Amino acid sequence: MESRAHVTAALSHVDEGRGFFSSLFDLSFTSFITTRLIKLLYAMLIVLAAVTALALGSGLSIAATAIGGRFLGLLAFVIVGPVVFLVNVILARVMLEGAIVFFRMAEHTAQIARQGR
Image (cartoon, rainbow, N blue to C red; front, side, top):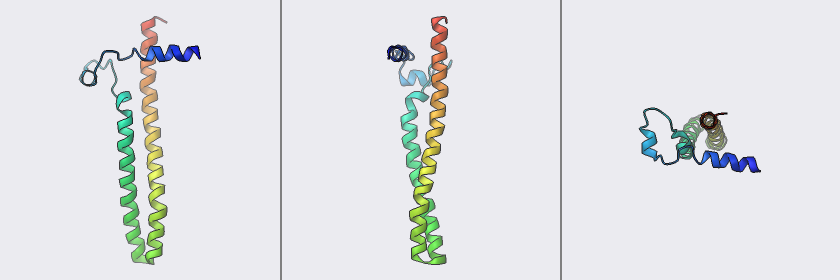
């Protein structure tokens, strides 16, 4: 438990005093904005996954209705839409978690280097 408090205290000093725009235009890349934007990016990707699922489900539903009737069209929309949405959200989450792990490793490595270990 004590080690968690130490890590949390160390992480609070990573970008201390740097604002978002200061970090955004930091040409030496000493501070990262990805860890600050990750929630917004995830929300945007969820919305994009929903729009994609609705568009694909609707298109497939229209095509299935033309071929096999209303029931097949409704079935295509109800099954394909949620599956496409879940797959897209899972892939987005895994991708963003990988990015966060990468950037946090860089931050922790920089902290260790500053401490002289």
